[in-house]
Length: 420
Image 1: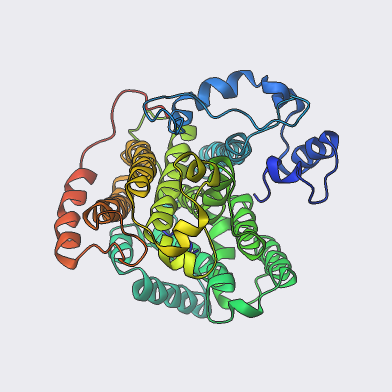
Image 2 (image 1 turned 90 degrees about the vertical axis):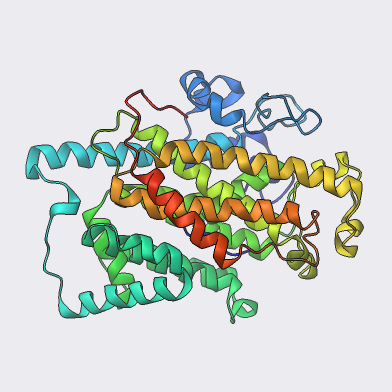
């Protein structure tokens, strides 16, 4: 499953026997890796519960699509609540926000300038490496690349560097040599990541990202989590419920949003909280990946994979055999309508946050959102046959979307406090 450009194992998996035999070990794992405070266990997470409420409304009960009830926290047979995927991801957002706010304070005190007005003089080799990143972006993400040209030079180069690292990471498990990739190879890739964040890049493409993270408040955790998403692809081909799938979508796509916000920048006139903008960026990544999944059901099935919540398939009366046989039935259409509705809700949450980005960054991100959201329309136009028909947005529709996105990008951020 490809990474969308614009974590790991779930508690449920841990409780079912992959190296963690008790609740205490599960909790120790979550506390050590994600620095989750013990007070968040047992459902008592106070302030977080309030902040997450509107995002949680996206996770509607599949038996009652109109419901806005929050998914329950994953529990063991003892009835004690454990931390959900949503909470794990939210903790990463809080760390990212803290880093951004710290750099903002340092900039005001020490430099009194913003990253987009600093004019460094890169070495010829580094400049050439950035140009190569731009070429890769132009080749594989044409629309997005055109949008980056509207950004300031520093932001543009940084986004190219992030895009190339994400693409190289994705190709480890989805590229021509994917069949030879082992967990050890991903471990080595993560070690290289840590080196480049420490200022020891392995090659010149890595050097562009190493340079980028010194200029913008980009945290290493989303990058590590993306690698964890690749690990999931190596060992996992089914997802029991949406909580598991949500975590996967975060790893392989939501992380891109968290990586990009520090570079995109928030509009100076925006009164939105940094946290709400990061939440919206996360929502865009989740929406894009859910759209990928719905578009590629047939292609994934031919590879023996099902990236759909198994419990929701069962509730809809759909079996794995139905998917592998590509049966487009009324039950399938009903199931797909609910999945498409969920993806659109994520897109709606994302669009609210995009309007808070710096003006030069809004257009490419809005264009990406509008274009990707149209894939859902095409699935509907194909009568929900995503087994043998690939939902494809034609060039004409794409071109019509660009001026709409550009016009939308000119609207100033709302003066009201934006919350997700």
